[in-house]
Length: 297
Image (tube, rainbow, N blue to C red; front, side, top):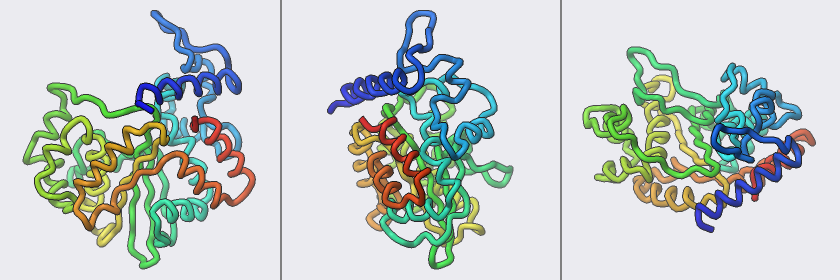
């Protein structure tokens, strides 16, 4: 399936879901109507989010008090999805631990300490991290079975691909500044093979690289808290979006041989299957069924 075919199938699926479970009406723009957009009224009521148990929409409004049409009404974009995927995990850290031990393929997580949605570490004058607006769609801190700390930074995608770098933007200046954070964290982290930074800067890999560097910058800047810590950068996406399978595997090839386990690809299908295997009760079963109906084509 090409990316265009996947996006068309995803649009059809979301329109059918919306018409069956939410509303047949949709947002009218000045020059067109788009059936996979909720009306502003439905968006403001949080109908793009799972509405049983877990208080997902409450968590959205605590993080973002104001309505945003792209996040709250566009069913083909990924902005709303981290809340549907990860807010329920905040209700049961033991469940979360089991899920991520299976995702990472190792039973080394002993205790989940924190889960945040749409998270960027707070900057101070001393701690600059990447000195930009890079954030995680979800962020997890945990304690390992060896009593060391660990972090997981997660990026979520649905129908999106890579994006073009805007000429003259701050990001263009940042990634080309050889004295800046992107270069220093890339070098200091030691996670990449030599001489790959020019490839990492390209449209194809830049966002994956930036999110991975944010995780590494936390280890570097907060070294007292995360001394000898583990870190992982994960991308969650539906298997039909083969772009990320292809690009993600090419990205892994640029990681040093002993650092390849610091990055992972997690399909929605795999996540749902693992959650089903680990589910603690019927409330989570209903949520899992919702995820399958909502996002799996």
